[in-house]
Length: 112
Length: 110
Image (cartoon, rainbow over all chains, first blue to last red; front, side):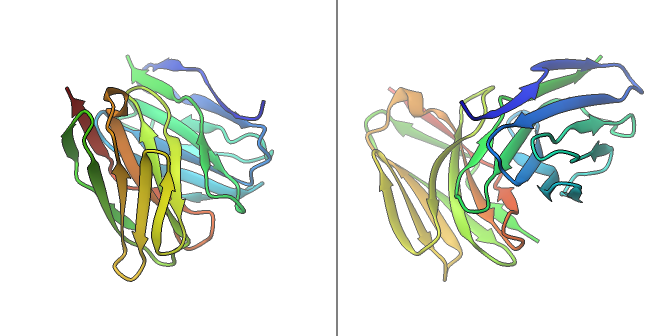
């Protein structure tokens, strides 16, 4: 079955540590997105990529980095420069010719 | 840039009808989507409007007026399981840009 997979589901980060969140899709979608969601809040766009080897900053890119070396994969690194990283992170993919975005089940990141 | 506005909270009675509004500003517009998210879960797609008018999918309907930059989601015959957050989203300039509103938390009460 086609879908989008995020891992891990829960992640704990120590102060000053970089962590990488995985996002893989087998839907053959060109566009992929990373969103951050804080409790009771909406989805804020971190980065998006419309094609392999290209990505764009969203509204809250500071302290985050991404890569898009393969169509299927769009990993997000939360760097030590992100001072308040505790949040729920959602990855999504989208096909230009369709209307529906598909989401992974999310990664809940906590700073300890 | 893009901006979307939705009410933050709505409460309705089981069996009733509720309307969740969304106004948007965007440079370039391809369509307005609606997503449902239960607590701790991933958003799931509900509906999409590219043209003016009403789209109906079972108990859910979505409306769009491009001239007013406005849309709404209409939920009929509310059930307790409809308690969730509902997000509107716009596809803006760049074709694959997808931006979400801040979400409306719907609480259905008996």
